[in-house]
Image (tube, rainbow, N blue to C red):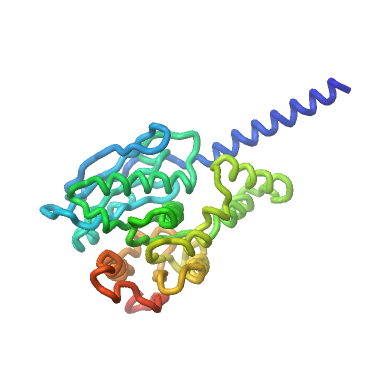
Length: 310
């Protein structure tokens, strides 16, 4: 009897260790090399490394506004499996508006340090490390900071907005409403049955990342964001449905969330021209909110794409 009990316990422990190893592997994003650099776009950038939790460092490019002092600054955070180079197209219009830009590689991405896994909460930690760095720069107005995040980076930006008083604005590109729904789609894609196996996987993922899905879900954090939020989402997004953006807008505090619908899928870079004007206008209103009483509209409009004006 003792031998049977011992073998059963050993088998359970082996199964748990195997499941843990597989889950950690699933939480590791693919690491892509930078496809280009600021030099390729004739941008004068500084390559820097920023300290983050547990002695790790992040790689980043800082692109200040030439000749400007105390300019507003925008932090750009990529999505899962991407890196800072994929956010470079956003720099030129932000510069033209007078903003310095910090482009981050999240941990386990680009040229930043490695970890056993990454997660939305760790993306948020990386964003906050970048914001802390920006506040110390003499060329940056630390009272006028904003974050533009894509996908997981957008969810992390919304989480950071619940904890920071120094953020003037968050721009969310293609954010999902709830990580539980993303994980359920992932289980279906890999034909993993939810009863027992899928349920255990989702429970264990929450233990590994150290956060409950409900506590980090954008549909919950957006209601507690301490700054205005602009949601940009493609109506043809096959990864995160456009209905998630509508749900997020409805979940936000009245008068603080705007939504722009664009043509295209999950990667909004191909449709950047469709929302560039709205994005810059939103940031201008937020950055100068204290100087202009009408800084944030009291009736956010859902801009539907049309043939003439997406």
